[in-house]
Length: 118
Image (cartoon, rainbow, N blue to C red; front, side):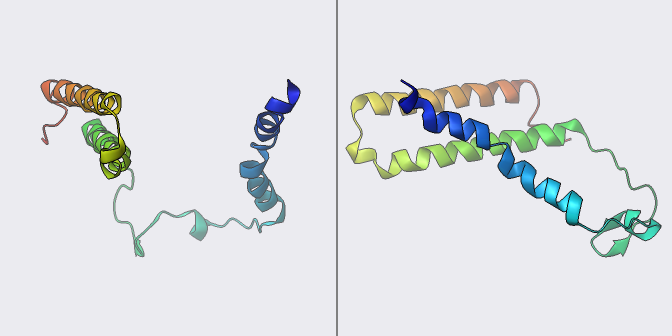
């Protein structure tokens, strides 16, 4: 029983080490000499003028998230389109259901006014 799960257990045990190891090594070995010039806000090679904390409307982020969702839809549909001739009828119904769920979500977002660029 354990032999079937040993790779998953090892993966779960060692997975946190890979992202944390470079961070810890950087903290231990990296130079740490803060000064006021390094702490200044830097944007596109030009010193900022005025307030650097500009607030954007939340609507822009929601618009971007909707774009990412439909971009991922295209990523999921591309392999299905490439193998369309090899798919059975059940797979075609699954794709239609997937597109219908996303269409309903788009209709909901549209009805809520999320897609209005004001």
